[in-house]
Length: 123
Image 1 (spheres, helix red, strand yellow):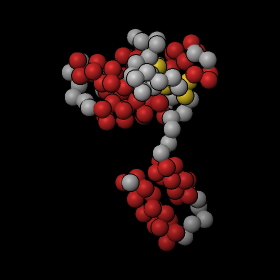
Image 2 (tube, rainbow, N blue to C red):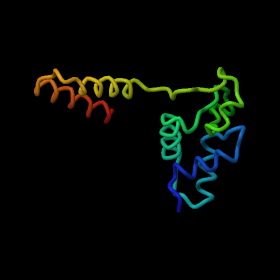
Image 3 (tube, one colour):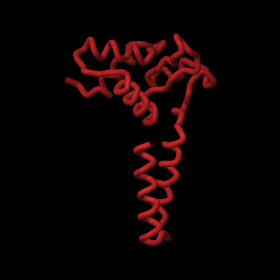
Image 4 (tube, rainbow, N blue to C red):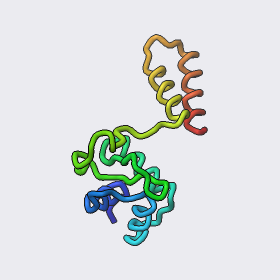
């Protein structure tokens, strides 16, 4: 069986107008994948961060349709969400990760930042 991320990309290639996350979830289940909302939502977010899919700003049943990157040009730039939204913990984790890359940190500072980083990922 194809991995879930690649299967979602394959599905979205067939829908130029996009699909809602629950529609993607149902198609994955129909194909034999054991998924729930969190798994599909996480996969879509991961694909969005990687630039493989985008979601549209418009809402359909309180959800944003996701489109494959090959259909992005079919929409006005104001209709497409380029980068996924980040929650505050993801933002904090990114800042801490960049701090860890600094070469002028003492071992104690590096340990402190690393612990904060790990805790932010668990939040």
